Length: 308
Length: 306
Image (cartoon, rainbow over all chains, first blue to last red; front, side, top):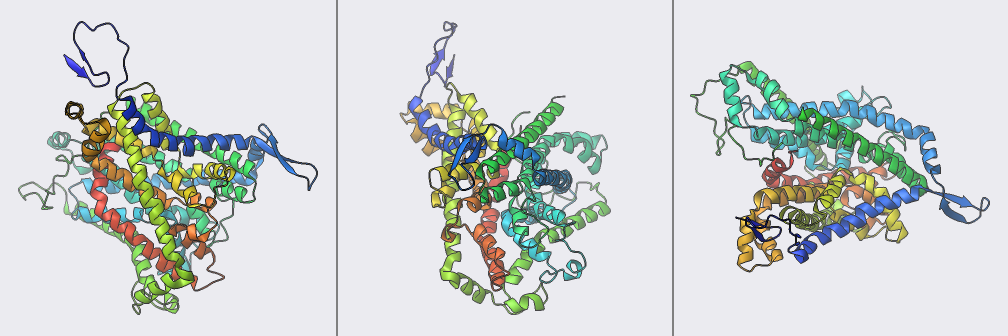
């Protein structure tokens, strides 16, 4: 005999036929779900739908100074998006950024997590906190801070910054990459480290009996077991990379090499400020779809690898 | 993959609860070279992570002239108090307004957002009803949608109803935390036993009352994690206030400092105010993080599994 919480029905052997399940606690469920659901609908679903709708409109005027009307334009805005050279340059730019910055950042996070999890270190709590502190700094503030650190005059490292122009067109993308890495390594390190902590110690005992050293254990045991955590951090890093806006926008004030269409999201913002909301909406939809496809694809890829 | 709650097992063999190393009877298989290089690597990176913040602190204690003339990583005259006073007085104390705005947007927003997310996650975990899985899948999709992708759509929507450039235009969207629903659902399923709920029902307690008096306490680590996460997300959210707000008195402190930083060429004294303002603004964040980081760890342990 067991009590089924959902139906509140004690199932004895005679209730084999599938009864009509009565939903219990309807009012309570509604109370619990309603606030989030309403806000989610209004501020996630409706805006997305409205942006898609706006992206399908074009502005028509009667003559140059006539009144503007928004009419259905089909995919006209999307045609403009695909013809927009600077936009696709910005997409290439963030792809390049991502291909380098994400592996470097996650590689460092993994290394630090492994070191924290090994018997090689003392003062682990100190390192854990010290490495996590940059995550408490908002990206905008971190970008402002590093903008000063890169400057030839105000930086504590003028010996370096006066010789290497970190804000030049060649280097500014990687200077921004450094800011992002600086902020997020500790955070990703903690995610991977939490996953490492959940590995049962019996596995290590068995490996040690087999004569495995620290590095061998890290390579053959720890890393495979934390691959889910690593892929989680990778997905969020990829999403974040494609959405890059705050750091480049701040760097615009430090470096003339950062154009108003430096990253896709910057293009969205600049276009909406013109204001050309329909085109901006189209850019936004294309960017969101790309992000979704990439992160979803990566998720499926890693899930399939795990299932093997 | 099975869900595990992070309870440190023997995987941390060298530190006990009081932080002491394990007795020396263990044979140390790791060579001094390995240990030294590990320490060196970590110390070098500690410098990398902390020196910028240290520099910011030092810079906040200097006068404008001293910023360029004195050694950057150590104090000149200690002017911090004067700098802070002039910062707070500048332009009728707009900086304080910004800090208050940030606290409202992020603090109140995360608090209410966590509550709503926890209620929803709890209901999804502990009750069965038609459409439950559909709702959860939609929420999961929402987790993958970054805040920046929503900024423009929200702006379009708020423009349509003429509500841009208001407090609510930033506050209301911040109340939505799909990740919060995801995390609390997992946590509620694992840490709130059905038997307890049954017992409460038999005692005559209503569902809502049970939630607030019993279940929420059991879900506390997840609640703190969600709160911290949402707080950080709102405080960091740059695109939304950037695109929504024109009125300087509504700015969160991040947007305000950015605006000042953009005017540094025209108004040179802003340079020092940006630095001091930045330093002041991160103090509450760093303190909150350090105080609550152990909740973060146990909450993350529950959430970082697939």
